Every structure is written in C-alpha cells, then in structure tokens.
Length: 178
Image (tube, rainbow, N blue to C red; front, side, top):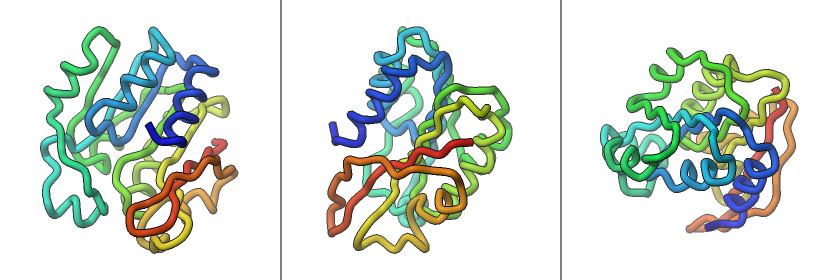
C-alpha cells in the first residue's frame, strides 16, 4: 500500500464515518480497507467498472486493468455496499445522499474531476471529510490532469506524504473543506 493510501485509511480509522462515498472504486481495494477501518459504515462506490475501454483510458490517463462490478461486489460481500456502474457525469448527478467521508479518485482529467466534485459537493455538509487523490507535483501537466486546478479554487490543504509517479513527478492527496 502506498504511503498516501496509508494516510487515507488512518483518516477513516480516526473519524469512523457512518457513510463513505468513493469515486473510482476500481478493484475494491480501497473500499475494503476503508470499510475495515470504519466497521458498520455504508459505502457508495462509483466507477465505470467493465464499461471502461481504451478510449476512456486515454482520456483519463488510466493505466490500470478493469474489474467488473460483479467482481467488486463479491470482494466486498459482508459490508453494506452500494455500487453504481457508469459514467460519473451521469451517475453522480443522480446521487444526493448525504455522506460523512468522500474519497475522490476516479478519472484523472481535470474535466472529469471537476464534474465529480460539482456533483459530490451536494452530498457534503460542513463536517464531511473530503479527500482528493491525484494532486500532482513535477512532470504531469496539471492543466489537463489531476485535481490541482480544482482544489486551488477551494479551501484546502495538500497532504503529505508524496508517492512517486512512473515517468517522473509525485502524487499527493488534498483535503478540501466544504
């Protein structure tokens, strides 16, 4: 587990949220870790899952393999999990349940991250913990990728540690205060 993910799980463990929203569920790793850190939490996970393809990978700078919603559902059995498959520009727009903890780690393009934030912030109170992944330093073009431009407009703090990015640069997380 990367250093920043260890920090994320520690944040969940300390706060014990009753509800967690994750954008970018991928294979369910982080979901399982967060649910173990906050037993009894209700989890909402959004992802393209098996609908992702080479085009979405290129647009979102994704280099990871894809997992099906069925695989992740099986992996997270025993927890209170609600998975939503599809493009978050549509699926998050239809979601309005208040949540205590948000982990934004879906697409990497600025446009997608901005859309995800615009849709998610409706579910946040002043007490909701909101953490963005993909705050880049170094070789990544932050005009096109990462959350840097979005969080720069918000009350935020960049969280350390930083993890290296293949090809150069660093990736960190940013906490936003709604």
